[in-house]
Image 1 (cartoon, rainbow, N blue to C red):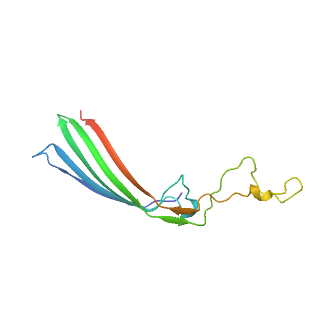
Image 2 (cartoon, rainbow, N blue to C red):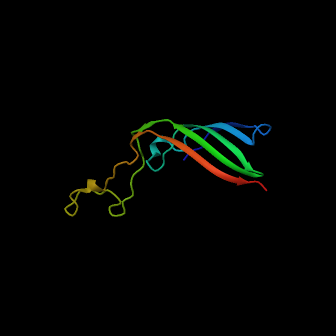
Image 3 (cartoon, rainbow, N blue to C red):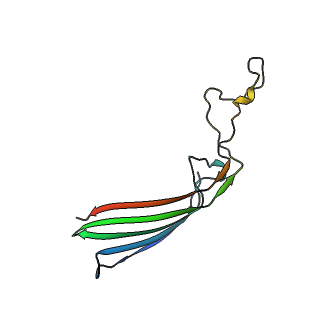
Amino acid sequence: MQDVFSLRLGGEYSLADKLPLVVRAGMIFENSAFPDRTLTPLTLDSQKLLVGLGASYEVMERMWVDVMYAHMFMKDLTVTTSTVYPQNPLRPAPEPASAADPQPQLAQPEAIGNGAYAMEADLIGLGLRWNL
């Protein structure tokens, strides 16, 4: 993993004088924590922009319902230089051909991170909050 740069901006506005409602919006820009060569289907990450909206409504005194929606736009990547290989405890290291093992290439794994990655995410949230 590598250092990440993150820029965040958000705000909220209360309509308390008219309605017991607070609205929110925000965005996040962040680069990837993984170099492209270490990306795998289990560690999806790339440059991203997240845009979110939310609201809180006071349903009774000191009790609020919170809702939110956000979409994460992520940069599509094509990886051709993966350095991630599968673990193989049965045949852990390649060996030269011999009479006992005429197919040593079976021990040489293929990189598992190569491929085209198209990534995005939708996030939704619902909460109930009681303020003491």
